[in-house]
Length: 66
Image (cartoon, rainbow, N blue to C red):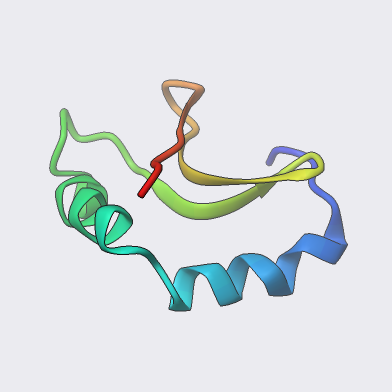
């Protein structure tokens, strides 16, 4: 498990409940291991940041503007 700032837990939950249209479109393609069987997490707190999408097995972070 990646270390994270515990103060970001509630804000990340709020962001998951209020995703932008662009994030929703991307999430529909990333969820349920649809891409190469990779698991993605959305609005994931990592260190002192909240990243839009995170894939731990590929050590990949995706940020979506819009």
